[in-house]
Image (cartoon, rainbow, N blue to C red; front, top):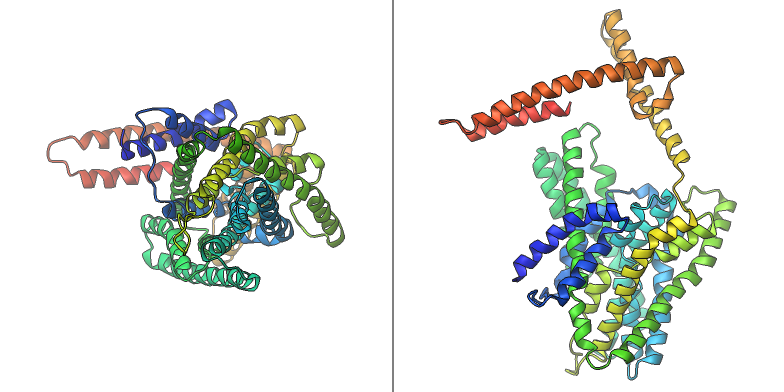
Length: 528
């Protein structure tokens, strides 16, 4: 099996792992990691040779962009305090604690190299957290915090990692320079992200065609990452800024086809890239195995100690941080998403799985310093990092569904239905307002006006059937049954038409392009 065949196996696994995960109640990323581990021990599977400096630029931009599409800037600003406590403060504290323990237990490990290890294992993976938490029916407030933490903690961790690596390679360290680098990296990233987001928004208006617009959205996250890195900014923060800008300002409510096709396209990209990323985590395990040859007991002990530090620090930080967030929430009456019980705090604690970013940063550790000497304890750092990744991703990922069920942490479906009902009312009222404006401008027949008024109500009832009174609801249900029957018959008619057009494609002299154009018209008609 060559590298290309291995890539196809990972892509196939990414597709198959989704229904298997749903059937077995297991996260698809965890299944893909296990697949990668299985492939490692198979003799005919080659070692992966992806350059470490390409893992983050290739995998992280589309994954971050897809994750941001599911949220909004308003959600981030509303949860800025919980996200700051997790994405910035907790990453920094984890780095310091891991660095101190690693420096103490690994013989000859310099403090700067130990801090680099702490920085690369500090950030929980945004893709793993979202993929796992989103499938378990957790309260939306927890998912929002995990998404915000996962998206912003990579920014903090990657900058801290580069500072620590630079201190090891150069042999010098300045706290003031490190702080300045952190600030400048953020400023450059935000500037690049906003500029690129504004330009991409304008370019989408010029393109017009949904296919070209969706194609541009695939290029934009890569462009944001590369441009920010070229100007010594944070590529991750640039992608987040661009994605949030486009989500806020590049949405046309009437552009139905682009929105539907865009959601489908990015669901596919998210599924495939996520599968490949976590499959690579398992495949890269061969490096750790090779490193530990003959030293298994000693190195496993180091890895277990760091795993314990990572897990305990998260718990010990979350308990007072959650209490503080609750106190500030009660005093200021802000609409923040925060855990409301110790059970939700425990679920948040156990959701801190490491993943793609940690793997890429571990593999990207330089081989030599500026003086030409080997990077101190590089093999030990890589092994410990993979131990943390595997322990948190596999053990926590496999047991999180059980823990959620055991603690009884579930989403507030009543609140979600109320909000859905509220949106249905607003949608119906907006439709009625527009109908009254049309009636004032045009002379509508009374029969048509009544029909349109009923359809305005139907807009709300189709979103939330509990919206209307009993009599109206029964009338609506009757019309829905009739409409379903009409659509069934119409669907069968359109199906017969499509079969006839597809059959014409094979006839002598038939122009496939014209056939496909007619078929596209029938397909669009079927969506209405």
